[in-house]
Length: 157
Image: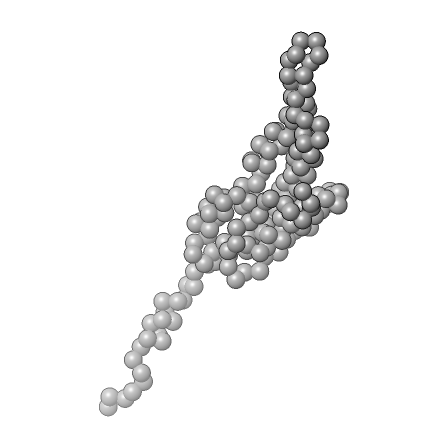
């Protein structure tokens, strides 16, 4: 799998349509590897395109990026070296450490992805909570509608 073919994405549409969202910088002191930085940029770009506010999610994006990279590395080890080892003495099969890592990291991603609206249910919940426009209602809409729908100014006298 190439670095440009990440299987995670954010559904199109926006929780806050029409509102420009900004992405945070990585937290101070965090040194992301080049691959982790690509994942960081990928996640932030898709959150911006979906209109999901994530300015305060810097640490969460770091955790997801690092966990995702480690998960991909463990998958590659499983593909290259296998998942189980067979004992020559008694024939028992035991998983390699990277096979356990792959399962554990997949579970961790399953816990962290909803925190960034990177799952369909979490995105739907945000959209539902945000309402149809995802923005504050126009407090004066009813007054403006009443004023503009008033009869034309015509003198009856």
